Length: 341
Length: 195
Image (cartoon, rainbow over all chains, first blue to last red; front, side, top):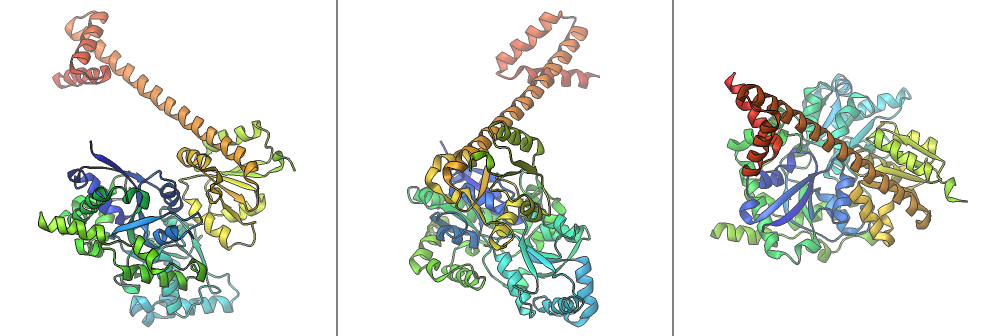
């Protein structure tokens, strides 16, 4: 009898690794029956993980830390991150109207490095303020998300005060494009394919990507409930090995066509395969070595969360707590066996 | 203040289910119950209704938006997730399994929230059971149509009586350990290929 492992995921291109592990036999080869359950909201994924309806989840890296630390709106849930996942790029998409205004007011800045283009936005904001217009609104996918920190960082670098100059709200990824087209928001930072979709529909333009703003930053992780990891050490190593092999499969450009078609299925991302394929070409590498959870990443997240005002002195994680959460041991064990075999 | 005074708001992607939950709550004695569907202007509407309890389907993408609004807004009384109070983990489990989540105004006593959440959970479960039964009934009807058609083809082309045609298919299904409808489908496909 194979071990059943239930994982939750969100409809994003970077759910690729668990999906491939389940669909291409990598999990089965490790004696694991990997059952995937989709959620359209991060809050739903958080709750299902917190109360054991799933054993683990494809999760925003900062959300894993926030849950473990007990600041994610629910009581603390001990988690283990044995492997990181990442394929889909985050990007900042602005409405076509706003983008055009920025190009009109500062063509040189808009032709320059994407990381600095918020300076053009700052000029638009000043012009709006002079005319007494209401502030522009931007959305990210969740308060505890790299998207949130990336948007804040991009805006701040343009000299924009993120607390007073703009409104920043939360919209679930599948709702982003309609929120932009309805004029409810003027721009957002989200993962793919939700930027490519806005561009394809002519609703928005990508102004900067994660690679422009925070190259090499961690994005999604596999977060497992600690009570599912500790008593099942071998199974966890096997699961991580399946994920690493799936990551290598995803990384091979020869598989991108098949991967895009797989993710396009309604039960996964449910968007056109061509759209997903285009984002895979641009996606960051997800080779086996990139899946190793590095403590430096966790420390970086702590710094981001502090800057965003999400951590207070009494909720600050200590080194032991971070090490319990961010655990490369399973990856190293899996890789060791992997290399030996 | 009695229980009936609590203002309850139901937000559900499925308007039919919202109606079922609303009726359940009203029948149980809560009179101030409203429902809203997916909306981009949630905060303004929530502000206008000033609910003490919000029942929202667990998978609703608007939850992400709502939670953050609750945190930053001074316009609405700050509701917190029902899951924060873990004194009744059995109820929380039942709620998540049924796909129900709830937000309550901070300070509202657990014993006043519990019957509301329990009513919502039982209505969610009843709704899903009805939907499942409806789907099954439709599937059964579909199966029966297939069997009728296959029977007709066998009678016409093989000169069998209605009873013999049916017995032949049922026996084949039992022998091959397949569903009668599958056999009927095979019969239909076979005759269609001959045409």
